[in-house]
Image (cartoon, rainbow, N blue to C red):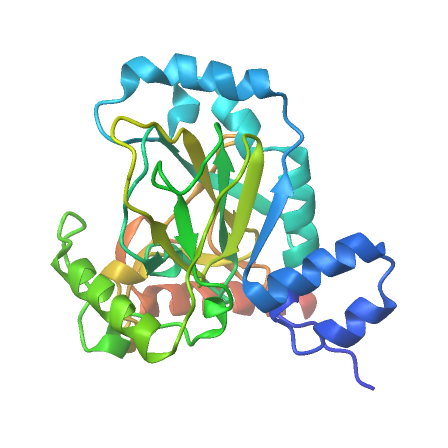
Length: 308
Protein backbone atom coordinates (compact mmCIF):
# COMPACT_ATOMS: atom_id res chain seq x y z
CA UNK A 1 0.00 0.00 0.00
CA UNK A 2 1.36 3.42 -0.97
CA UNK A 3 2.25 5.80 1.83
CA UNK A 4 0.63 9.21 1.73
CA UNK A 5 1.55 12.21 3.81
CA UNK A 6 -1.91 13.70 4.19
CA UNK A 7 -1.96 17.47 4.47
CA UNK A 8 -4.86 17.28 6.92
CA UNK A 9 -5.24 16.93 10.67
CA UNK A 10 -4.66 13.28 11.58
CA UNK A 11 -8.23 12.94 12.89
CA UNK A 12 -9.53 13.96 9.43
CA UNK A 13 -7.32 11.54 7.50
CA UNK A 14 -9.09 8.78 5.53
CA UNK A 15 -6.33 6.46 6.78
CA UNK A 16 -6.84 7.23 10.49
CA UNK A 17 -8.48 3.92 11.43
CA UNK A 18 -5.72 1.76 9.96
CA UNK A 19 -2.93 4.00 11.22
CA UNK A 20 -4.44 4.12 14.70
CA UNK A 21 -4.52 0.32 14.90
CA UNK A 22 -0.78 0.11 14.28
CA UNK A 23 0.24 3.19 16.28
CA UNK A 24 2.25 2.98 19.50
CA UNK A 25 -0.31 5.01 21.46
CA UNK A 26 -1.78 3.43 24.58
CA UNK A 27 -5.40 2.27 24.41
CA UNK A 28 -6.75 5.20 26.44
CA UNK A 29 -5.18 7.72 24.05
CA UNK A 30 -6.38 5.77 21.01
CA UNK A 31 -9.91 6.03 22.37
CA UNK A 32 -9.48 9.79 22.79
CA UNK A 33 -8.41 10.07 19.15
CA UNK A 34 -11.40 8.00 18.01
CA UNK A 35 -13.82 10.13 20.02
CA UNK A 36 -12.40 13.38 18.68
CA UNK A 37 -12.56 12.10 15.10
CA UNK A 38 -16.13 10.87 15.54
CA UNK A 39 -17.69 13.56 17.74
CA UNK A 40 -15.46 16.58 17.10
CA UNK A 41 -14.74 17.23 20.77
CA UNK A 42 -12.86 15.80 23.72
CA UNK A 43 -13.13 16.46 27.46
CA UNK A 44 -9.93 16.22 29.51
CA UNK A 45 -8.63 17.24 32.93
CA UNK A 46 -6.04 19.99 32.66
CA UNK A 47 -4.22 18.87 35.80
CA UNK A 48 -3.57 22.49 36.71
CA UNK A 49 -3.88 23.51 40.38
CA UNK A 50 -7.17 25.09 41.43
CA UNK A 51 -5.21 27.99 42.88
CA UNK A 52 -4.28 29.01 39.31
CA UNK A 53 -7.94 29.42 38.37
CA UNK A 54 -8.78 31.22 41.61
CA UNK A 55 -5.96 33.69 41.07
CA UNK A 56 -7.00 34.37 37.45
CA UNK A 57 -10.53 35.16 38.61
CA UNK A 58 -9.20 37.48 41.29
CA UNK A 59 -6.80 39.34 39.00
CA UNK A 60 -9.23 39.79 36.12
CA UNK A 61 -12.27 40.79 38.13
CA UNK A 62 -11.48 44.56 38.10
CA UNK A 63 -11.03 44.46 34.31
CA UNK A 64 -14.46 43.11 33.37
CA UNK A 65 -16.55 45.80 31.73
CA UNK A 66 -18.04 43.36 29.23
CA UNK A 67 -18.81 39.64 29.55
CA UNK A 68 -15.34 38.81 28.23
CA UNK A 69 -11.76 40.06 28.08
CA UNK A 70 -9.74 39.31 24.96
CA UNK A 71 -6.05 38.44 25.36
CA UNK A 72 -5.99 38.67 29.16
CA UNK A 73 -2.55 37.03 29.03
CA UNK A 74 -1.35 40.64 28.69
CA UNK A 75 -2.79 41.23 32.18
CA UNK A 76 -1.54 38.10 33.96
CA UNK A 77 0.83 35.35 32.81
CA UNK A 78 -1.45 32.81 34.50
CA UNK A 79 -3.77 33.06 31.47
CA UNK A 80 -0.80 32.13 29.31
CA UNK A 81 -0.11 29.21 31.66
CA UNK A 82 -3.60 27.84 31.02
CA UNK A 83 -3.21 28.37 27.27
CA UNK A 84 0.07 26.45 27.31
CA UNK A 85 -1.16 23.66 29.59
CA UNK A 86 1.03 20.60 28.96
CA UNK A 87 -1.87 18.14 28.81
CA UNK A 88 -3.70 20.29 26.26
CA UNK A 89 -0.67 20.86 24.05
CA UNK A 90 0.31 17.18 24.14
CA UNK A 91 -3.10 15.89 23.05
CA UNK A 92 -3.33 18.53 20.29
CA UNK A 93 -0.01 17.31 18.87
CA UNK A 94 -1.43 13.79 18.75
CA UNK A 95 -4.81 14.73 17.25
CA UNK A 96 -3.39 16.99 14.55
CA UNK A 97 0.13 15.62 14.06
CA UNK A 98 1.41 19.16 13.80
CA UNK A 99 2.76 21.66 16.30
CA UNK A 100 -0.01 23.77 17.88
CA UNK A 101 0.31 27.33 19.10
CA UNK A 102 -2.22 29.48 21.00
CA UNK A 103 -2.91 32.81 19.31
CA UNK A 104 -5.88 34.22 21.21
CA UNK A 105 -7.50 33.97 24.65
CA UNK A 106 -10.98 35.00 25.78
CA UNK A 107 -11.80 35.11 29.49
CA UNK A 108 -15.44 35.18 30.58
CA UNK A 109 -16.94 35.96 33.97
CA UNK A 110 -20.52 35.19 32.90
CA UNK A 111 -22.03 32.94 30.26
CA UNK A 112 -21.72 34.30 26.72
CA UNK A 113 -25.25 33.22 25.68
CA UNK A 114 -23.81 33.26 22.16
CA UNK A 115 -25.80 31.84 19.26
CA UNK A 116 -24.62 28.62 17.66
CA UNK A 117 -21.69 29.05 15.28
CA UNK A 118 -18.51 27.45 14.01
CA UNK A 119 -15.16 29.04 14.84
CA UNK A 120 -14.09 28.29 11.29
CA UNK A 121 -15.98 31.35 10.07
CA UNK A 122 -13.72 33.56 12.22
CA UNK A 123 -10.38 31.73 12.03
CA UNK A 124 -9.44 29.25 9.37
CA UNK A 125 -6.48 27.83 7.53
CA UNK A 126 -5.15 26.49 4.28
CA UNK A 127 -4.94 23.51 4.40
CA UNK A 128 -8.34 23.32 6.07
CA UNK A 129 -9.21 22.49 9.68
CA UNK A 130 -5.86 23.25 11.31
CA UNK A 131 -7.55 25.32 14.02
CA UNK A 132 -9.29 24.37 17.24
CA UNK A 133 -10.70 25.87 20.43
CA UNK A 134 -10.25 24.85 24.06
CA UNK A 135 -12.72 25.91 26.76
CA UNK A 136 -11.45 25.59 30.34
CA UNK A 137 -13.80 25.82 33.33
CA UNK A 138 -12.36 28.13 35.98
CA UNK A 139 -15.32 27.20 38.20
CA UNK A 140 -18.00 24.50 38.20
CA UNK A 141 -20.52 24.86 35.39
CA UNK A 142 -24.08 23.53 35.31
CA UNK A 143 -27.28 24.09 33.35
CA UNK A 144 -28.16 27.25 35.32
CA UNK A 145 -25.17 29.54 34.78
CA UNK A 146 -25.04 29.71 31.00
CA UNK A 147 -22.99 26.65 30.05
CA UNK A 148 -21.50 25.95 26.65
CA UNK A 149 -23.53 23.85 24.23
CA UNK A 150 -22.28 21.87 21.24
CA UNK A 151 -23.55 19.51 18.54
CA UNK A 152 -21.57 16.24 18.57
CA UNK A 153 -20.55 15.14 15.08
CA UNK A 154 -21.49 18.45 13.47
CA UNK A 155 -17.84 18.99 12.51
CA UNK A 156 -18.42 16.40 9.78
CA UNK A 157 -20.81 18.73 8.00
CA UNK A 158 -19.34 20.54 4.99
CA UNK A 159 -17.40 23.68 5.78
CA UNK A 160 -19.54 26.64 4.72
CA UNK A 161 -18.01 30.04 4.03
CA UNK A 162 -19.82 33.25 3.11
CA UNK A 163 -19.93 32.45 -0.61
CA UNK A 164 -21.62 29.12 0.11
CA UNK A 165 -24.59 30.90 1.66
CA UNK A 166 -24.82 33.58 -1.02
CA UNK A 167 -23.05 36.39 0.83
CA UNK A 168 -19.90 38.38 0.17
CA UNK A 169 -17.33 38.88 2.86
CA UNK A 170 -17.33 42.29 4.48
CA UNK A 171 -14.87 44.93 3.29
CA UNK A 172 -14.84 46.43 6.79
CA UNK A 173 -13.69 44.40 9.80
CA UNK A 174 -16.07 46.35 12.03
CA UNK A 175 -19.05 45.30 9.86
CA UNK A 176 -20.96 42.28 11.19
CA UNK A 177 -24.25 42.33 9.23
CA UNK A 178 -23.12 39.24 7.34
CA UNK A 179 -22.44 37.46 10.61
CA UNK A 180 -26.06 37.81 11.72
CA UNK A 181 -27.14 36.20 8.45
CA UNK A 182 -24.56 33.46 9.02
CA UNK A 183 -25.99 32.76 12.51
CA UNK A 184 -29.49 32.50 11.02
CA UNK A 185 -28.14 30.04 8.45
CA UNK A 186 -26.51 27.93 11.18
CA UNK A 187 -29.74 27.71 13.15
CA UNK A 188 -31.57 26.43 10.06
CA UNK A 189 -28.68 24.08 9.27
CA UNK A 190 -28.80 22.43 12.70
CA UNK A 191 -32.52 21.81 12.31
CA UNK A 192 -32.37 20.66 8.69
CA UNK A 193 -29.58 18.13 9.35
CA UNK A 194 -31.09 16.82 12.61
CA UNK A 195 -28.19 17.74 14.87
CA UNK A 196 -28.66 16.95 18.57
CA UNK A 197 -27.48 19.52 21.10
CA UNK A 198 -25.55 18.64 24.26
CA UNK A 199 -24.78 20.93 27.20
CA UNK A 200 -21.31 21.06 28.75
CA UNK A 201 -21.64 20.50 32.52
CA UNK A 202 -18.16 20.24 34.00
CA UNK A 203 -16.07 20.63 37.10
CA UNK A 204 -13.48 23.31 37.68
CA UNK A 205 -10.27 22.47 35.83
CA UNK A 206 -11.83 20.40 33.07
CA UNK A 207 -11.39 21.38 29.43
CA UNK A 208 -13.41 20.90 26.27
CA UNK A 209 -11.35 20.68 23.08
CA UNK A 210 -13.37 21.18 19.90
CA UNK A 211 -12.62 20.99 16.20
CA UNK A 212 -12.71 24.09 14.01
CA UNK A 213 -15.99 23.12 12.33
CA UNK A 214 -17.83 21.89 15.44
CA UNK A 215 -20.97 23.99 15.94
CA UNK A 216 -21.35 25.37 19.46
CA UNK A 217 -22.65 28.34 21.45
CA UNK A 218 -23.76 29.51 24.90
CA UNK A 219 -26.91 28.53 26.80
CA UNK A 220 -29.17 31.11 28.51
CA UNK A 221 -28.32 32.15 32.08
CA UNK A 222 -31.11 30.70 34.20
CA UNK A 223 -29.78 31.69 37.63
CA UNK A 224 -29.77 35.47 37.94
CA UNK A 225 -26.46 36.91 39.10
CA UNK A 226 -24.55 33.68 38.57
CA UNK A 227 -20.98 33.73 37.28
CA UNK A 228 -19.41 31.33 34.80
CA UNK A 229 -15.69 32.00 34.92
CA UNK A 230 -13.98 30.30 32.00
CA UNK A 231 -11.18 30.68 29.51
CA UNK A 232 -11.29 29.98 25.79
CA UNK A 233 -8.03 29.65 23.90
CA UNK A 234 -7.87 29.39 20.12
CA UNK A 235 -5.04 27.45 18.52
CA UNK A 236 -3.60 27.36 15.04
CA UNK A 237 -0.98 24.87 13.83
CA UNK A 238 2.33 25.44 12.09
CA UNK A 239 2.86 25.49 8.32
CA UNK A 240 -0.47 26.96 7.25
CA UNK A 241 -1.94 30.06 5.72
CA UNK A 242 -4.17 31.80 8.27
CA UNK A 243 -7.21 33.91 7.40
CA UNK A 244 -10.71 35.03 8.41
CA UNK A 245 -13.47 33.70 6.12
CA UNK A 246 -16.01 36.20 7.47
CA UNK A 247 -14.17 38.97 5.63
CA UNK A 248 -12.88 36.95 2.69
CA UNK A 249 -14.11 36.07 -0.79
CA UNK A 250 -11.86 33.27 -2.06
CA UNK A 251 -13.73 32.75 -5.37
CA UNK A 252 -12.69 36.27 -6.42
CA UNK A 253 -9.27 35.93 -4.80
CA UNK A 254 -9.83 38.21 -1.83
CA UNK A 255 -8.45 36.91 1.44
CA UNK A 256 -8.31 38.58 4.86
CA UNK A 257 -4.93 37.30 5.98
CA UNK A 258 -3.70 36.96 9.56
CA UNK A 259 -0.20 36.90 11.01
CA UNK A 260 -0.99 35.28 14.36
CA UNK A 261 1.36 35.49 17.29
CA UNK A 262 2.28 32.48 19.35
CA UNK A 263 1.38 33.93 22.74
CA UNK A 264 3.68 31.47 24.52
CA UNK A 265 6.80 32.71 22.74
CA UNK A 266 5.84 36.13 21.37
CA UNK A 267 6.83 34.93 17.88
CA UNK A 268 4.83 35.99 14.83
CA UNK A 269 3.87 32.82 12.96
CA UNK A 270 4.30 33.66 9.31
CA UNK A 271 2.04 32.17 6.67
CA UNK A 272 3.43 29.22 4.77
CA UNK A 273 2.29 26.64 2.25
CA UNK A 274 3.83 23.16 2.08
CA UNK A 275 6.77 24.43 4.13
CA UNK A 276 7.35 27.34 1.76
CA UNK A 277 7.06 30.86 3.24
CA UNK A 278 4.30 33.05 1.89
CA UNK A 279 5.03 36.72 2.42
CA UNK A 280 2.30 39.22 3.07
CA UNK A 281 0.69 41.59 5.49
CA UNK A 282 -2.29 41.49 7.79
CA UNK A 283 -5.57 42.45 6.15
CA UNK A 284 -7.18 42.24 2.75
CA UNK A 285 -4.82 40.88 0.13
CA UNK A 286 -5.53 39.31 -3.25
CA UNK A 287 -4.55 35.66 -3.45
CA UNK A 288 -2.57 36.42 -6.58
CA UNK A 289 -0.02 38.25 -4.38
CA UNK A 290 0.57 35.05 -2.46
CA UNK A 291 0.69 32.94 -5.60
CA UNK A 292 3.34 35.23 -7.05
CA UNK A 293 5.38 35.16 -3.82
CA UNK A 294 5.20 31.37 -3.73
CA UNK A 295 6.22 31.06 -7.37
CA UNK A 296 9.23 33.33 -6.71
CA UNK A 297 10.24 31.17 -3.78
CA UNK A 298 9.97 27.98 -5.84
CA UNK A 299 11.98 29.50 -8.72
CA UNK A 300 14.67 30.52 -6.27
CA UNK A 301 14.85 27.02 -4.82
CA UNK A 302 15.10 25.49 -8.30
CA UNK A 303 18.00 27.83 -9.17
CA UNK A 304 19.81 26.83 -5.96
CA UNK A 305 19.27 23.12 -6.64
CA UNK A 306 20.54 23.49 -10.20
CA UNK A 307 23.62 25.42 -9.04
CA UNK A 308 22.63 28.61 -10.79
